[in-house]
Image (tube, rainbow, N blue to C red):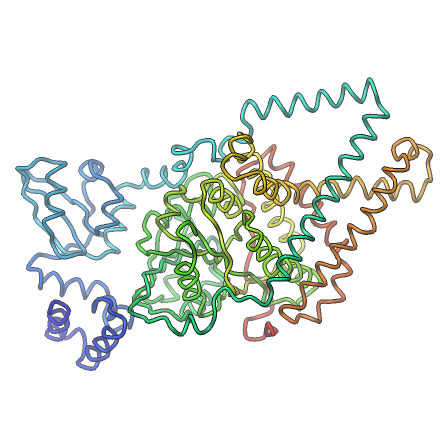
Length: 619
């Protein structure tokens, strides 16, 4: 048996012990995985040592591709995706002999593919190497191709779905035409135009709040439903679990790399079926050195992302997606602490769901909720969003904007969608809407990933302005062809998209002018407000002021119950103050949309004084 021969070879070379082999074989009986992967996952053998043993079994030499890179001109004649999929890469051609490095047993299929490109008279000479070496060789030999694909892949395939173009010519024409028309109407008919504008803003403000209230109520009615039960998780067998890729994009995160490794080790999933790709920016030497110093297990692969603009998380994730070999794929941020059984819950959800289920989103929450005012408000907001809004959208079958982490994908569908948009700074929300536009659905699972809430206002403003700018980008991208969008997703889903993705920044932008007008009237009692606020508009504005803010306070109060965060209940009354921060971030986002649309405002992590161990339990 081939797996037994590998074990015997490793024993003969003194690389493993009898105890290691017995343990690995017992594990293999339970999981059905390859012996080599199991030994690597158990830490019994280094990857390079195992492939040296395989080389001797296959009767071919071993090659270290970190020391001997392939010929770039030769490599560029082939399909790089096939290199990743089948774990081989041509190295050099000398006359009619082509040397091919492989991490799999030499196969006739590879020979035939090489000959189909280079000619049937070519002789293939195999050399053994590791999967790591092959991926490294691809990044080194095809650096510019990998960077170009990660940056412009979506734009090349579907330019209309990419935020690379901020405004198309028709959108620019409509925007300029609308502004000029409004100015002309204000000049010719100042009072009716001002009243109509005031009325439109108030109606839109009210509609946005009522929409979110209805969605949250739908989510609350589904509170007792569990998309995945403990019995379903217990029924899973390790041998039936698929390979899973975990992408972890990190940038300037040297201070929390060690903590990240501990959190990933806590996942309840067969380690030999995990592929953990740590996405490290090429010029971030401090984080790269910290990652090496953390001595990650052999299941962790360092993927160095080529330096280039825009320097964004979605570009890094696209590089990771190219090298991903798992059937399913999930994104985690550096500070994330997911529930240990989250991957298994995602597997159950995908197997229960329809064929067009592209992604399932886990809830996000914070382990440092009690740290200060800002972390308390952030926790209230996320509890309301992930525990009520997303389940509500799921129940009403409306498009779900993804969170930036803990979204689990079918890898093949993610590739079909074109991956992430590197030019959209809220790439997750965009991807959720793009999936809906192409007929795919997004679901939610009853699992939580705990993160670090921003405890510093400046850091919070940077993060929130980026998110809101991304919502604005997403609206601009997906309304380029509104009729086609309505035809693809239906009027109901189009309405949900406009109200949620478009309504959120609009509400935050509209709030300050309305507040300022109210405060001005309160202080001056000027008769000019009689000019702008006839009785009907005045009553609607007063209704918005009282009921609108009251509904948002109520929704934040509702957020505490599912997780029993009762200590946060009084802070729900301070939601109007929290809205002021949102409005500041929104105006910053609008300015950056015009001046720096692709600029990624970096959120600094690891600044909390609270650790996971001292955090309040969720229940």
